[in-house]
Length: 151
Ligand SMILES: [Zn+2]
Image (cartoon, rainbow, N blue to C red):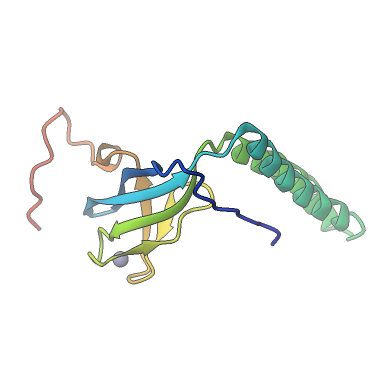
């Protein structure tokens, strides 16, 4: 994969923010998220890379009989979607550090390329990265403060 990430700290080290890892059946766990904000030109570049890669694969799939009915339009569409998603990505995550809400082990998590799914390397559970813990709270009605869950 030609994904060259030039992660450089260009003086602005204020990239650490607070987020939460959530998993079904456990209270959200606060984590520290490191990231950087790509410039507009860089976002366009990343979008074009996704577009070119997918469309190159689509072109390569044209000679494949039968499969090209699915592969070619699928890859063309995937290229557009990926390009759009990458262009929309105003923040690229480079590091997630904190405790897993499931197993409680403090560690580094692999940042998601896109989306919000994070895998815990310890307990193999799929976690969801949330900006605030309220997004994953079960609909209990009202705005009561989150009390300690006794389980
Ligand atoms: Zn875990």
